[in-house]
Amino acid sequence: MSAEVPPLTVLGASLDGEAVGLRCEQGRIAALGPEVVAEPGDTTIDAGGAPLVAALVNGHTHAAMTLFRGYGGDLPLMRWLREKIWPVEAGLEPEDVYWGARLACVEMIRTGTTRFWDMYWHPEATARAVRDSGLGATVGGPLFDAEGGTQEMQATALENLDALAPYSETGVAPALAPHSIYTVSRDLLRWTAETATERGVPVQIHLSETEQEVEDCFEAHGVRPAHYLDQVGLLGERTVLAHGVWLDRGELELIAERGATVVANPVANMKLAVGGVLPYPAAREAGVAVGLGTDGAGSNDSLDLLADLKFFALTQRHASGDPTVLPAREAWAVATGGASALLGGGPRLEAGSPADFLLLRRDSHELGLGDLHSDLVYAASGSIVDTTVAGGRVLMRGGEVEGAGEVVAAAAERARRLGLA
Ligand SMILES: [Zn+2]
Image: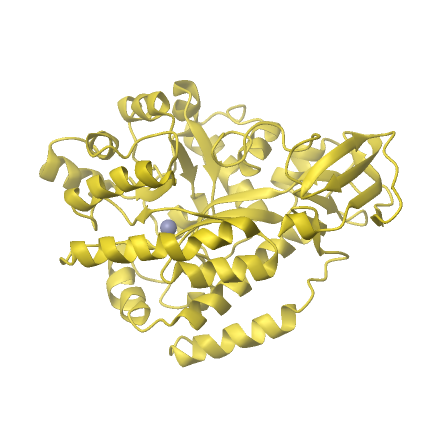
């Protein structure tokens, strides 16, 4: 899709206190700096002094679960899944997933996220929604075989990979997504590792979300979850581990050695009361790549990653008893994918990087005169975003996302069909 986007030039933006221009071509930043000017034929935006920042990367979500927002939220994790979520998911149709994911994309565009990692049923419907929204994503259908059906699951996974392949041209990358070590057999986990290597696709999995999971893993396999995942060949540079709340030092060192990324989901962890958060200081010390995610709207219930960034920073300070443990600029780097090569890589705003960026509202009282990163982490939420650009395409300007009203109405209709509204 990015190849068809006309060149875009943003003039008069503020970057680290300096007035800059930014020119995008073919979905990438072609030039950035005070000397940048528009060329004939460019779409031009006058930023009027608005702060320019990199867009956010949501490292773990289930986009279509916007349909489940506000549904059965007052239950513990396993009862919530068994009694509320799984029975409804059994009747999901691709169009439900499409409109749920479209709604999620509107919310992410509004709140400054341009790329996300998704695990959900009917992944092709999510890929279609991402394409139609103009965002980027890595998408995988969940693998489950807790009650048998391993071979059928393998066949479905291969069908999903084939169905997702054409979307790579539009910024949607396929992934394999075994749900967790407690819902997927050892055989299927091994198969996933082999298939991911053969196909060259990344893997996303929930890991060490609850203490019970660690105890059960130890009882069943004699090792803790990260070591078990390594035994089945699933810990590698292209693996995203969602949660990681109960990882111990030995597991963090192993994860760092293998180069996997751990994505913290502090708000979902607190909502489901799992009793902890990712031990970020130990993860950083071990050299683990880290990202930030919202998890699905069923367990958060918001997809506003900028709001969750405050929770990430606060929970880390609070849990460590150390207010210096996570400087604001470092927290911001985690939320923009800058602390994981797999999620986003190094600095996001430079020539050659994907043209994924935000202009912030100049009239916003959340941005004071002090440090911008501190304001972004502790004072702001997604409402501070004025303009969202993904792959050089303007998806929101002046806080307005084109077609948002229709998406909200269609998603509500699908939720009613499922008995969720
Ligand atoms: Zn999740």
